[in-house]
Image (tube, helix red, strand yellow):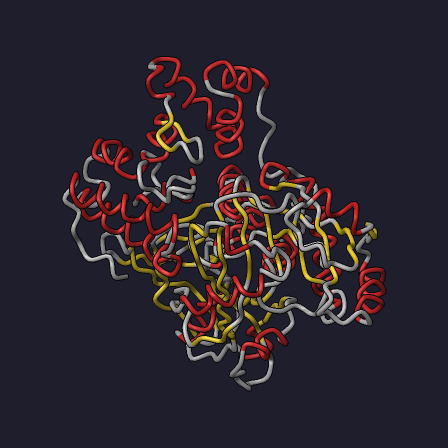
Length: 539
């Protein structure tokens, strides 16, 4: 039986943040995740690094938390963040009296606000509707959830932390009202893993109630599904929000060469209910047209949905999207010794991606106190990744085009050195396997050999393979020979291919019209005729 001081359940941003914090304090910790890291809510959101301005009126505690963490993350995780800035724009349909409340709320939360003349704003964002009445600038930004989660995981491992993906926690082990361990199942080979520990941290997000229920504890977590759209170009150069109480389809977030429009809010029964619908797509497009009148002329490459884990202390289950938005976006740390007379168990629920580090700090403080560890938190001061040596940067720029080199260095950090060595040995491996995201053969080969990569989708989350405008039409089959070299590690290639294409299809199906329909037909032709992949794509 394996022994650790702490077991963390859940491999999203909060879970890996906790693993890093505990490991930096010298506390032995193991994180268990039922899928790949960042496969859940932490990668299924609009990618906004909140300034807190969206919550300035309705949720001042969350607003204050967001602006403080916004500043910290821009310092410690700059390679994961595009500091675009953000605008809040008042439309003719919006209530002008809300502006005063909002500006005052931002002031109380410490969020800097600067008004911009609409004429100046139109020059900077030419697609924006010319009916906008007022524009205010705030320090919003865009954040790459995949990069941030993996950077935390690598940092945690550097400090001695450990994580296991594809390990589903089946139950907690309770002895005389005290947690003494967990039982998990390896979903790749069916083996059971028993881990002894002194503390379990339940950071399972939308699955947190299921973890608590394994020992009979009731934990109220509301599953709030939000659907988003990805466009194949950068419609705005900065984050643009409607200046009104948070609602559906009122924010555009630019990422690299695409733009994400979000989001909806619908209470669902299960975290697995994360499939976008055509009705949601149409609703978002109609709402988005208010800010970009030509929106429906632009190509949507994908719809996707995530499930927000919201927390309410009372037991009333909301039945409408509006009630879901009424739940605070701040977080709750639940000591189950106080609440349920179970020692050694803490749950962290609610919160925002932007506040993941703060949530992790509060949990780690709680754990450290109970374990008698007095080492203070350092996660707000120490960069997530070490600075890349200049010799590695020069080598990358010598071997690869500038943009490709920079993207690879952001994704791999110092691990890029082994990839560059391979490209220098065999320049053919410097060719682009994925042109959309500028991923080389050597990078995919390296990631495919990582011990925590088990499926094509795992490679996608680390490299962005298949996430560009072609949605994997060309790069997917090019990656298959690299998987074949890792004999016995991946499922049969036909199964891997079918699984990956079905995952892409899930988000493409609701947006099949115009250019996207034509491209999908091309993709179908490639895989059906050339690779004989005629399997079911009805997921």
